[in-house]
Image (cartoon, rainbow, N blue to C red; front, side, top):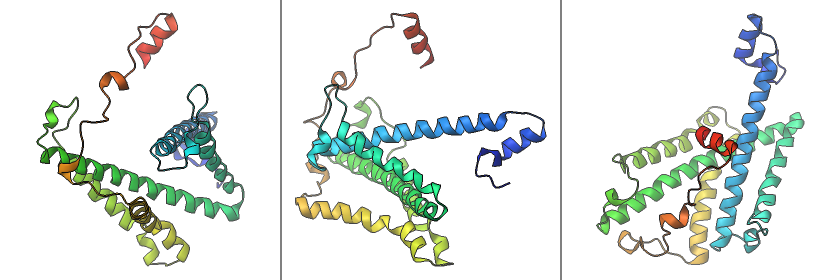
Length: 237
């Protein structure tokens, strides 16, 4: 049965054959709550990243505008607009476009993880060149920098081979969906470097002292629970 719902799940089919009723509704509820949670998380992170870029002058200043409670409202509204693209699935013809967008964002996410690993490798190189002992930090890993090399290798490999099937059955749309992120990523990076005339800092030039907040500045002070609800919440979370 091609219903396009959670009823196609093998777990649902198994439970139905076992005589368990109502499970498709439970699975649908679980899928919905999971999707809602993921969407909420991505909306939070994307809007705050856009807000942070605006504060650094790397995005239009309007995205740094906040409400009196500190909510970056313009950034939240702008990022929320992209959720409307989900309605492309309503039409079978536009569903293919939505699939392309999903593939593009997935590869874009892999680029993000690759950049995180590359950033750590530069951070590690700066610490090593300046003789700063990582073991004096609050957190350090004995497996670094090897884990970052491992991460760069696998993310790069996935980016390269994620559209390998297009070379056996070539289509322009398939090729662009799989690999358009590569020129976009490097175009944005080098374009920003040329436009802003910024430089790549050498390890011995990196500043690990100024502008770094203390733990007290980044962590809210601990407030002990007072009510029964707060005590239960603290135990659970």
